Image 1 (cartoon, rainbow, N blue to C red):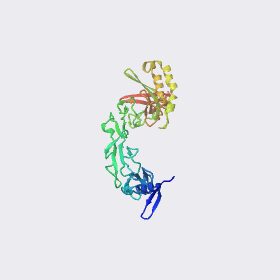
Image 2: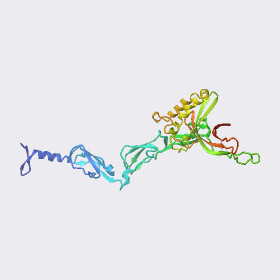
Image 3: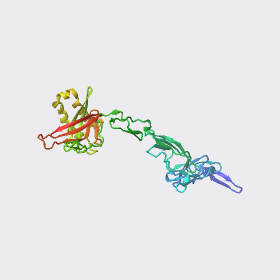
Image 4: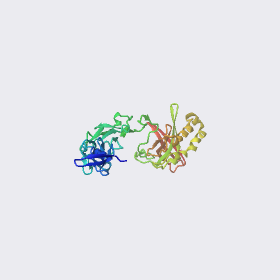
Amino acid sequence: MAEFVRTRSAATSVLVPLVLQEFTVKRAMACATRTDPPEAERGGIFCSNSGPPYPLGTICAHSCNNEEGFFRKSGDEGRTCQEGRVWDGDDLVCVAYETDPTVACAARTDPPANERGTLFCDNPGPPYPIGTVCTHSCDNLGGFFLLSGDTQRTCLEGGSWHGEDVTCTDVDECASHPCENGATCMDGVNGYTCTCAAGYVGDHCEERTRLIPFDGNLGPIIGGLRFRRRREATSTHWSRVGDVTSLVYDADSGEEEQLVSFAAPNLEDLGENDHLLGPLQYLTQDVEGFPTNYPATTTEAMPSLVEDFDNMLDSFNCSNNGPNCNLTRGQDDVVKLDDNWYIVYRPAIEYDPGSTKRGIRFRILIVAWRGFRIFIRCFIY
């Protein structure tokens, strides 16, 4: 049953429903709807009470639609319903960044992303709302360190960033002269490369190589019957025959050093990107047969020849992360495979006696030299 309340005026007495009277009283104590910013266009609104109308004390939070490019130009983002049915503060005004770049801050580019450092901002962007704090850091693990600038910067009113751009720089790893024995140091990102002088190997060129790379071409071949009369005469018996490829085994035997050279025709004519494992495996029969053909030499000077050869081949095993996994020919005339095995590309000269009673021809290959010691291989045929 509805409840009624009698209201009086000077002339009449009227019955008014109680619910209508309560609504009228509440309406007099409430605030109207908020329209700033326009909903679903430039921003959004969230209020702590349902409405409109909104009860006294209701707090409405206004926001501009940053994702669509609208940012706060003026006004208050938080407003409260007060006595007198009024909202405190000023209407929020949202403006497009494209038309007014002072309402937000542009993208930060220091340090370059994914190159010398990282950037983290506490608001999404760009553009970034006023008050956004961005933290910059240099990629120390990548070898870059802070040279100048501010690592924390804030987007200020007017669309500018406070502070100075961060500059990350690469440390010069060659400054400490890490390369030895006259090597050349080339600085890189978080590292360096040593280019060794002839006769040295190792990451820092700290180890003297057992085989000195051949540098340059053979000089003119002179001699023959007219050698004494004309020192400039070129020999009619000696001639260059190009490079010869060998697999060289370098074994230490007491104080003496032993070099054994295996002819390796399968390693000739390889391109610099051609893999070496296959051609090396063709030499297995020659190496394993050496102890049978030369038992005394093997026992005395190189007892571990076959074992060392097997270990060298195993170094190409990628499943075991072998150090020679996918090793290619490259461009060097001496390719070090391990401490004992080398592939050697050397110039060769050939002697042809011509019209003599004994039809002997032989070819000499310069395998390696160390100071005044020259190691050669001679073929007689």
